Image (cartoon, rainbow, N blue to C red):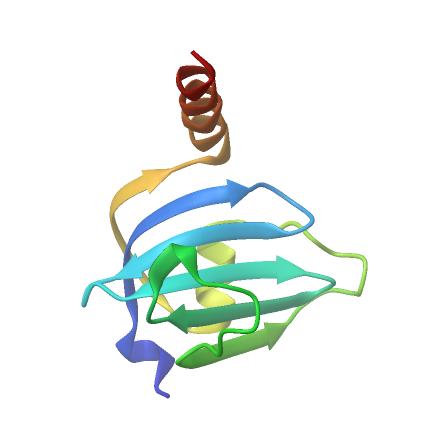
Amino acid sequence: MDSAAVTIVRAVQTCEALPSLWDAWDDRGRYWCLRYRHGRGSARQYASGPDWQPGEEPAEVLSFEHGDRLDGFITLEEFAQRAGLALALAEYKPWNSYLADETAAALLEAD
């Protein structure tokens, strides 16, 4: 796959470090799981979206190695550069905003 053909337009950071993790969508509406841990980054495209199940094979995979096996933090910008992805973010939700939304949703469900 030509990673230069993938432009990420929306991203939600679901974990800040160990691993650095994002749910992301490209300009064609495809879902990508972006993950960096142990010095290895992977971008996996799942047809089922963010509700993919363990064992489901990704449609496409891009990967890179950077740092050492103890590394688990990377910014989205550096991740994209190293994976060869283009960023043209129309929407971005950082980890602290995602966490606040998830906490609020759990509190509403508990009522």
